[in-house]
Length: 164
Image 1 (cartoon, rainbow, N blue to C red):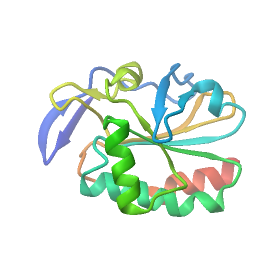
Image 2: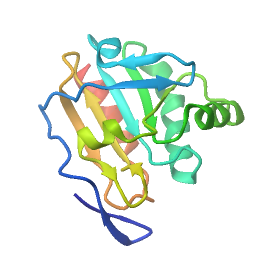
Image 3: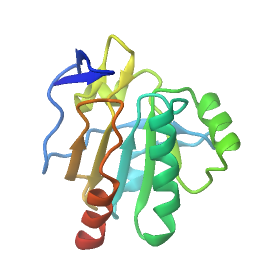
């Protein structure tokens, strides 16, 4: 998929998976040191916010914004996935006071490659929002073309309100 970063063209490793597709199997580490897999999030709706680097302005804003909204959706999993290491994510959470959003590390880009959102020239996953239904299928997605843009938070949250 063609994307831009600061208006400079680049691309992901393929076409991102589509709506109604099964989200790929994954095994990622959380900031608490636990291994999280698809099985851990099955059975309820899950919002996954993929950010390239938690230590950049837009990624930080996105994660803090969704962290504030978690309480309004007690029956929904909220995850942020970045290619940062677990240690970098822990440092960011401590500095920003983020405690509700679960951060997962895709430091090797393995999930990004399976989803079709891995950006090789930056060694990061492309910014995107995914909402999975309780069966692990993609029910909603937003693919952000200009990576310095924020996602449409309202649209994702409205989808959760409507569909949950």
